[in-house]
Length: 206
Ligand SMILES: N[C@@H](CCC(=O)N[C@@H](CS)C(=O)NCC(=O)O)C(=O)O
Image (cartoon, rainbow, N blue to C red; front, side):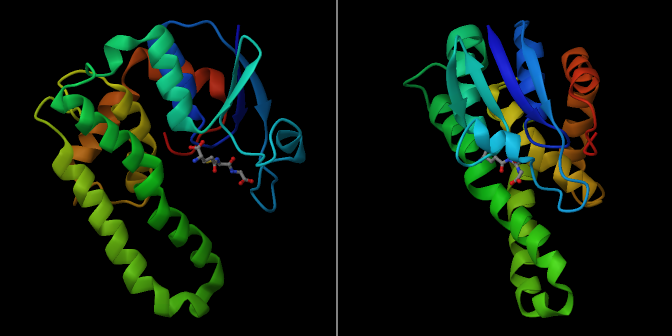
């Protein structure tokens, strides 16, 4: 049995999408962000000290961190979504998998948090802006003619990169990132993505 601790309007949406792509049956335990702070509710901290989403339980074993969850799910149910170990594509795939949370999210979150400071954040803005451009441009240049990262079909890296790509579109960068915009349009047209969207509830990055 697979249970997803899913927070509305969050990167947990990618896990629902992956589960739909893999044809797995799963149960959603839904949590709502606080209307004022936008933080996760305390119920999530009862599951794990960090109180973040996504968290997944597979046969009673709790797994945290999107990247780890995606790897475990692909290992068990979707090996076709990860290039074969020992190949160059596998190394490139690992790079993009880790880039999604380990690199791309840093300037995105810095922008989000410093955005609340108003003028006090002015000295930081140029560096954050430059880093956002660099990370999104790197994604733009990583897209293949097929519209995917790493290989010419949907891979686990595409799933992980979908969230920063959606953030780029939400920041109205489609004009400067046409390949990334097409990537987001293509994933949103997939039946599995639509099904996950239906099941997941509010998601402002669609
Ligand atoms: N690196 C973690 C990040 C998890 C994370 O920060 N999730 C956000 C949702 S996008 C969250 O739960 N935020 C609520 C809060 O911090 O109160 C992962 O990929 O799983």
